[in-house]
Image 1: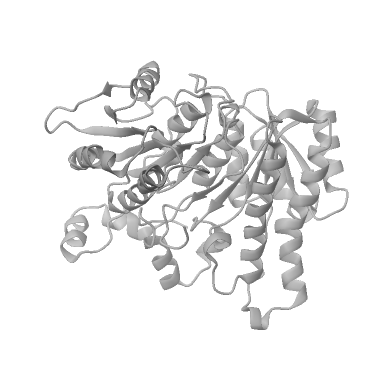
Image 2 (image 1 turned 180 degrees about the vertical axis):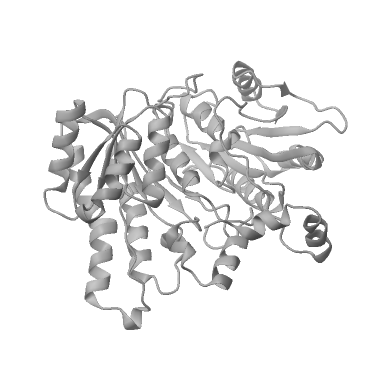
Length: 446
């Protein structure tokens, strides 16, 4: 459903009226367009460590206009702040205040990205304090930015260098329009595997992907984006959605497979189809999900059990068979759809929130088991996304939900699909066990 208010407030003279009245003024977000530069303006790199020059060199290889100092009143496309060597909070003042003095020159749709380290076991208290302070600063800054600009961070685990392939891939993603609705979030890079960003517009070329719940909404958009990025597609949904499913698959030259993911043989059928049609499977996207909302006091067994069966138990069962099959590639990626409801909770959704929180727990535990195997598993947690489901919400509830994020608008299914494609890409091979929120930094949750 179109956001009429967003269109209204960006048309003259209503922009001036909204400003004078102190009303929210969301702007159209900068989203990915093939052929456009990663960042629409100069990129400033701030930092004192040896990694600062290394990151600058990487950005130069992407044909970006990289600066270490900005000229007065010069407009800024992005700022990348390198903080990988922090040992004490006293080191933060100069660099953050320098950044603050430049924010008024940040272009609409601009980006701020920090690269730092999380506190590790045994870290001295003063170092841990400095490292954790970066997260508080970044999340607060994201709430201050306007004009569709975002602020996100990359966290480097012990042993990961700023020049790691997955660090570069995460940096490119966060600077680009593909991260339009990711705001105030951190991506942890656990190791330096993966391939760095390339000039190719098809990073998933040669990969085969299964998308469940593909007939409509977010699932159909994931199919489109994965295909745009080069993947061969197997679109999966229940037989009742067969007509819509066939259209989605035909649009991308893929194949449709009518399977109920709760069926005991669902994984076997998916793997067999992938092996016989494409020689195997590389990417599994668990998108299928349902809601059966009720207050817990009014909840019945059928509503609770059906949501858990589709949203969580099916993923658990399919993953066990997938990871034990030679038809799932040695560097395969699993991406699971969670929800901010599973992080923050939501009234009337105890069953749904339980299932989505369960997905996050499953992802983290599975990632530990996959460590060192070459395979990855991650979750994507959408917030308020403009879908048929949200279009059915009462008007006032829908409008409030749209304006509660730092970006003051709902996201699009495209925004979720972009994150799924990034996490499924070879460049993200060093990223596993993450639950990346796609919510525009909604005020609920962590």
